[in-house]
Image (cartoon, rainbow, N blue to C red; front, side, top):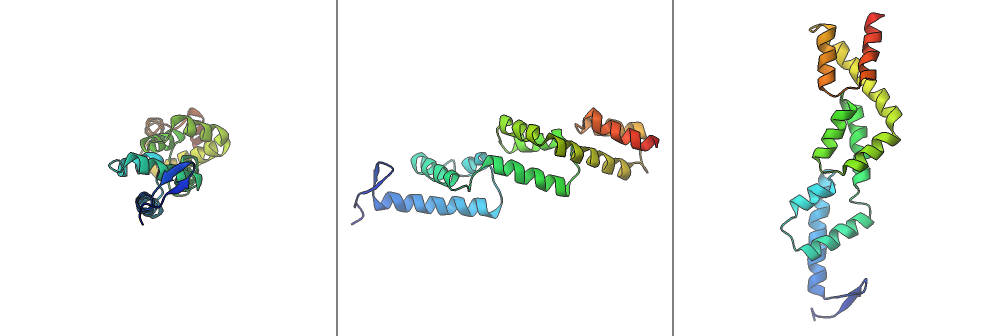
Length: 163
């Protein structure tokens, strides 16, 4: 009974194989529904699974939109912008550490450069306002340079400080 052939995308599969695919898909879905994940994180977590079954699950979840690194970039950057003060460079490094393709990150930054620069300038101002009581202006500027803030963003706090 378990050997009834089923054809999917030109492949012949039996019920046992489909049960394995379904079980792995359920495990992967639980993993990615708990917290947003990149494709690299998913691959690392499930690296000991059967490659053929795993690749089928990954491709299926990509088609369904559950795995999408570009969406991950957008959601993560929006989260950073709402919760943290970071430079664009820091954001880029955080995303690279998650295993996201550098070109995808650079494309997103290029396409959203204006809003990201506004965010970075505001972040620099927030940091300046927090640190001005305990540090002098030059130390704050050096701190921001080390954090990867652009010259333009640091200049904006200099302009504000001189007013």
